[in-house]
Amino acid sequence: MARLIEGTSGEIPPGRIGIIASRYNSLVTDALVAGAQEACRRLGVAEDRLDIVRVPGALEIPLAASVMAKSGRYIALACLGAILRGETDHHDHVAAVATTGIGNIMRDHGVPAAHGILSCDNLEQALQRSGGKLGNKGAEAMTTALEMASLLPRITAGN
Image (cartoon, rainbow, N blue to C red; front, side):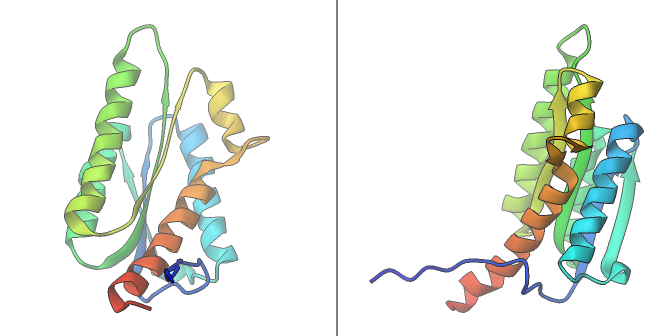
């Protein structure tokens, strides 16, 4: 019979937790950060375990997250930003680079780096996803990162 190994957000291992957030589109990203902080409180993570790193834009998030993951100090990272469609396809390129970078961090460093970078057509869509009627993707990203931080030691321990 197969064994099911699941992570739960209630069994968070010791270590630091990082939020990497862009300053660009701060109306949105500040709300995402607040959502991630609230998720930590809800899950019983002491605020003194949390580091918030602000970077200029979404494109810089993977570099800061990579340095944090490589340090060995962090058990989970939430990567938060907001990319809004403009008149050119620049939005698509930034989103692709940021998404690939976050995936590479997890693969290369084995640290959960949850993707909470919104890629929206307009500001209204981003506001609805950063605390509006569609929830808060910052809180969702943090919850995911912490669940994965809980799951990984269980996989390696075989429990």
